[in-house]
Length: 185
Image (cartoon, rainbow, N blue to C red):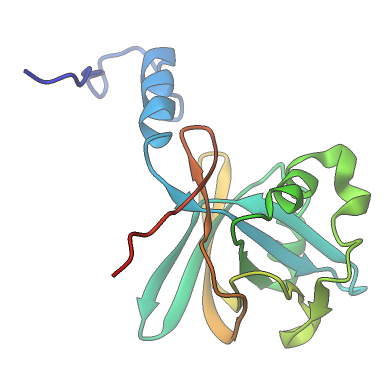
């Protein structure tokens, strides 16, 4: 017997517009997404004056190897959104375990002035800030932007990759941060 709970809302019959989900679907979807483990990343960018900007993100995926490309999802209310929209540049910094303090600085707007305060930040491709202590930094130039719901999906062609620290990745899982523990081979 299955322990899954099924939530179904027929399309067109729920009295909701196509742009809004029922509260039941939204709650069920949120719970379902908490069961997907995803790498914790910092999306960094720089404005036209070369000032650094960033946000914590887990909605990041590779799209293609030919051409090498990545997709990031950025809420249009995020302070970094107009920066990426204007410059068409971003860097995906994949965090390692032990970097939860960095996530906190990039997740809370009241800590915005502390985001790039450490010596772990350098400039890379096109002056984009990257975290030298990250597992890797992937620099991208936006080739497509798709507006959907509250977010813009940016597809970026990879321009440069810097391999960083070796170790276990930091993950989002079940509403919090988690670490991967591999079994010996």
